[in-house]
Length: 168
Image (spheres, rainbow, N blue to C red):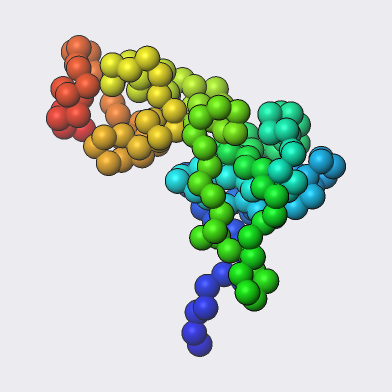
């Protein structure tokens, strides 16, 4: 027997198994989206949609009512057409990078837990705010989930450097 990979398009993102077809079906149900492709890009969900006239914020708002928070794409990128290869498959390499500013997407924390963790991490790092790219992975190379599970209460005050070097 030889293993040739998955026959579906599921992937794991932040420890959660995601079926992009579920997101694409919800986008199609909205009416203004003709076609969509959802992929993990730079650690967040990105949906490419046609036509290019799609108004992103109302679509995202309506998706929040249809899908759990972890399935709402961080970026929705309107395109004239979805690029295809010569064999008719989606040309992932030809898809543009999602803009990280403006109304096309946000790296802001989405859930109450993410907001709480982001506030704590911003305080520890001495920043005003942090988005997914700042809170999901710490500078010590561990995800916030594993960092939080390894953290133990401490009665002494500690700085971000002290906490990083303190044995757990």
